[in-house]
Image (cartoon, rainbow, N blue to C red; front, side, top):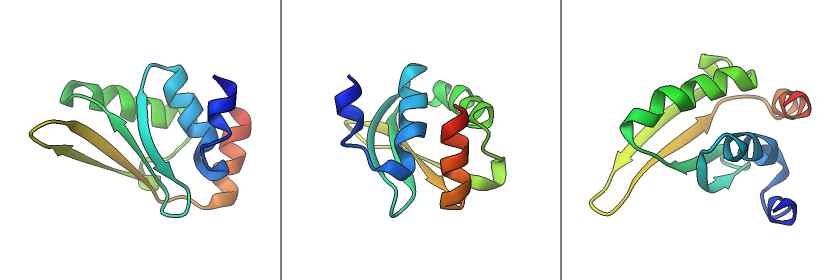
Length: 93
């Protein structure tokens, strides 16, 4: 599994690993646009919120956009955090 993470862009890699290690299925991410998408149900939102806070992100540093499509439900986590701070958080996690 560790080789899989090398395909995730460095800026969001540690947060993706952190979420996946806690049972959150990440499906897409991009550090250039600062987002991570996850498959989830509405009842998962509170858990994801708490994981982001536990990771060290402040509520002002993320926006959650939940989409409910006919065949799929997913959450996009938009990160409004500076790259340097994100890398520091990743080192702690």
